[in-house]
Length: 588
Image 1: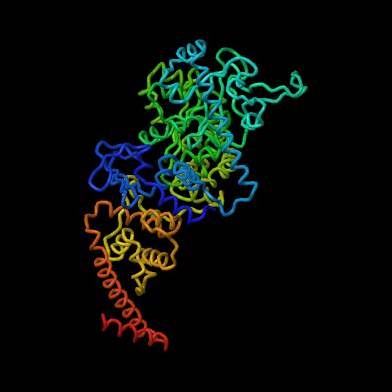
Image 2: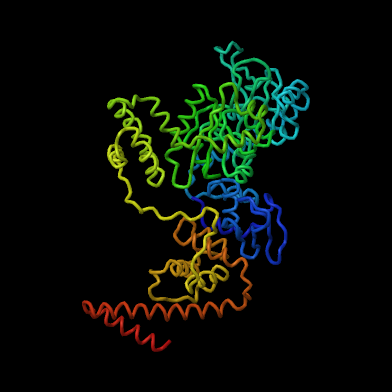
C-alpha cells in the first residue's frame, strides 16, 4: 500500500498543467488552460485544466480528475502505477507500507533491467541504420522510416555476440535475466558456459509497457528461417500473457476510432499503421488471455478481433471469445473479423486500402452471433441429444458473462436453437432471467455527469474550493439522507483530524478515491471550473448555505418525529430530542 501522506506530498509537488502538457498541447484561457479533449474527438476545445484547483475536466465527454487520474485515463495505467509514473516524473521514490525486503529487491531489479533493455533497443536501432539489407527488407514491406522510428524498430546483426558492442560487461547477469542472451550448456553443442545473443539477424520490434519502458523484444527473420518470429522469454519485466504489442503507439487512435483492433503479428500492427489504421495491437505469440482483455477494456469499450479465416485463426478466435466473456459488462462489446484465407491484415490493407479494411472491422461479426454459429456447428441440433449437447457446451460460457442485459440477450438468442424458452434455458444454466423492466435506462456514454442543483451540492462545491472551511461545518440534522451532505461531512472530518497537510480539490479526490464520496467530489470540482464567483465571497456563501441546510435538517427531523408520535408515540429519549429540535428551530 502506498501511504496517503506520500500521495498528498506528490500532488503538492507536481503541477497538473505540466503533467497534461507532456501529452496534450494546452493554451492559456483566462485563469485556466484549454485544449481539444484527448479522450474524445472534437473540433472546438472543451477540455479545461485548472492550475488553481489542480484538476481537469472535459465539458464535452465528462472526463475529469487529478494529475493521477489523468495518467490513469490517458495512459491506461492502474492506480499504483500512475502514482509511480507521476513520482518518477517528479524525481520522487514511492514508499510502500507493505513492502517486504524481497518485494523491494524485485522492484530494484526491474528498474535496473529496464536500463539494460533500453540500451539494447538503442543498439538495435543503430544497427538498422548500418544494415542496407535490413533497410531494404523494411522498404520491401512498404514501411517508411517514419513508421520504423515510431515503433522503435531495429536490427539484431548476424553473429554470436553482437551485443558485446553495446555492453562492456557482456557477461553481466542482467543480460540473461532480461532474455537478451543465452548461456549455453554442453547439450547446446557449445563450449560449456559460452554466452551468445538470443536475437541474431532479425528485425527487432521492442515491446513497451504502459510507462514506455522497453520490457522485451520480438524478432523476425529477414529471409527464410525458423522460428519465423522469436520473442523474449518470460522475465521479471516481460510476460507474454499480459503484454500487447503496439498498445503504447495505438492509444490515441483507439480513443479517436472508438475501438481497438487485435491482430496476430507485429508486422500486421506496423503495416496497418503505415496505411493509416493506427488502432491495432497484437498478442505476443500466445492466445488472447483474460489479462489482455482487461487491459484493452481499460482503453475502450469495443474490441474487434481480426484473425485469419483458416482453422488456426478460428481456433484463436474461440480462445479470445472465452477470455472476453467475463469482462463483458453492459456497454462493452467484442466482435470478430475473419479475413479471406489468402489474406492477413498486412496483405489485405495493401490490396484493398485502409478504408475498406476499416469498414470490414466496423461490420465485424458480433460475439453473440459468432458464439451461436460456433455452438451450432459443433452440435446436431436436429436431434434432442444434439440440442442437449449445445446446452451443455453453452452453460459454462453463458455463466461467465456478468449479470446484465448482454447475458439476458444471449439466453434469448440461444433458446430457439435448443427448443427451449429463455427462462427454461436460464434454469438449465443455473441462472435466473431478470424481471421485465428491471434494467435502468442507460445514460448516453458521452454525457457529462450532472446532478440536480441543491444547497447540499452547493456546499460540496464550496468545500472543494476552500476545504479549510470544513472546520466550521458542525452538525447538520439528517445528514445520512443526503450523499452530498455526507461527502461534505467527510471533508469536515478530514480537516478536523488533520488527515491532509495541504488540502486541495485534487488531494481530496485522491484521499477519497474508491469511496462513495469520490465521484461526488469529482463532480463538484468539475462544476466549479467555470465558476466566476469571487473567492473572497466563498466563506460568506458557505455560512449562508450551512445555515439553510441546518434549518432544513431541523425542520425535516421535527416532521419525522411528529409523524412518529401520531403513529406509535415517542420514547422519552425521542421526546427530549423533539424538544431540543423545537428550541433550536426557535433560535435560528
